[in-house]
Amino acid sequence: MTSAATARSLVAKHGAGEGHAVTRSTFGPITLSRTTRHAWLLIVGVALAAPAWTAADQEAHQAAITFDDFPGGEALACQVAICRRIANALKAQGIPAVAFVNEGQLYRKGEVDSRIGILRDWLDAGLELGNHTFSHVGIDSVSLPQYEEDVIRGETVTRMLMAEKGRPLRYFRHTQLRTGPTTEYREGLGTFLRNRGYTVAPVTVDTQDYMFAAVYADAKHRGDVALQGRVLDEYRAYVQENFSFHERLAVEVLGREVRHVVLLHVNHLNADLIDELLATLKKRNYSFMSLEEALQDPAYARPEPTTRKGWSWIQRWILAEGGEARPEPREPPWVTDAVGALTARRRSDR
Image 1 (cartoon, helix red, strand yellow):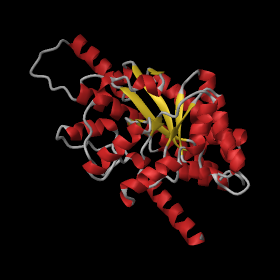
Image 2 (tube, rainbow, N blue to C red):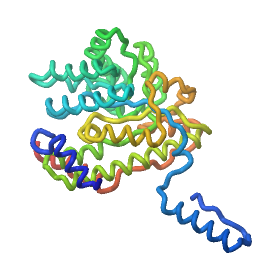
Image 3 (spheres, one colour):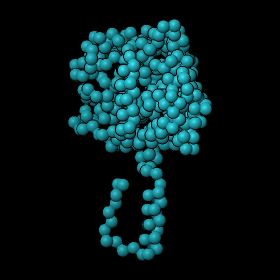
Image 4 (cartoon, rainbow, N blue to C red):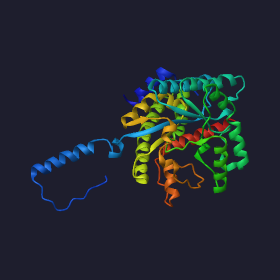
C-alpha cells in the first residue's frame, strides 16, 4: 500500500478533521572460473537488491514496551480514544507495558474524573503504571529537593489506582531520561527513589516518536493526507534504522544482545500505527516481556556515569568505561524544521 493510500485508510478509519488535535570485503588475486564468476555476480546482485538487513537484525531479540508522558495532552475525547486503542492492541496480543504518568495532565477543569478514567482503563487492560513526576519537571532547572517534591506529587493518584488493583507502584522514569546534572544530585535522587520503593526504568531504544508525532497530529488536524503519508513513511524507516542501530550497539558494548526497554508515547501516530509497529518488531524477531523481566538482565547493574544528556543506557555504559557516545539516528531535518515552525506558531498564537 502506498503512503498516500495508507494515510487515506487511516483517515477513513480514525478521522482527520476537527477534534484531532558492507562491511566491504577485499579479495586478493584469486583466479575464478567463468561459472564461478557468474555465480558470484548472481549472489552479489541478489544481495545488492535485498534490503539492508544484517545478521544482528535476524537474531532473536527481546524487549519490554513502555510509554512516557501518560495520559497525554490532547483534547479529552481524542486522548481517551488514543489510549484506548493502544491499550486494546497490547491486550489483544498479550503484550505487557508500563505507562509513566505525569499527574499534572489529569487536572483540567471539568475533566479530572475522565482523565483519571484513562489511567483506570489502562490498568483494566492488564497493563501497569509508573511515575514520571507530576509536571514533567526539568531536572537541570530545579534543586534536588524540588525534584523530589515533584516525584511525590506525581504519585498520589497513580499509587491509589495501583493499590485498588492490589499492586504496588514500583517504577519511576526520569523526565527527558536525565538522571542528574552532578554526581551528588544523581546519587542523592537515586537514594531517594529507592527509599520510596521505586526501581528506575531505563531505556535502550528511544524512538523519538514525539518529533514525528507533532507533525503528524498537525497534519491530521488540518486534514493534510499527503503530509500524514510522508510522516508515516519517514517514521517507519526511522524505526527500522533506530532499532538496527541499538541492536548492533548492544552487541558491540556487551558482546551479546540486551533485553531492550523501548520508549514510546501515547499519541495519534502510535495509536494509528500500533498494530503495524508491533508487527514490525515481530518481523525483526522480537518477543515481548514485562519490564520486570527485562530488568533481570545483568547489564542493567552496570555502572552509570553522570551526564546531562538523556542518553540511552547502552550509551551510558560506553561513557562509564571512558568511551565516547556514538552518533545516533535522528529524525529527518525537514521533521525538525516542521516541529520548530509549529512551536513558533503556537507561541505567536498565545
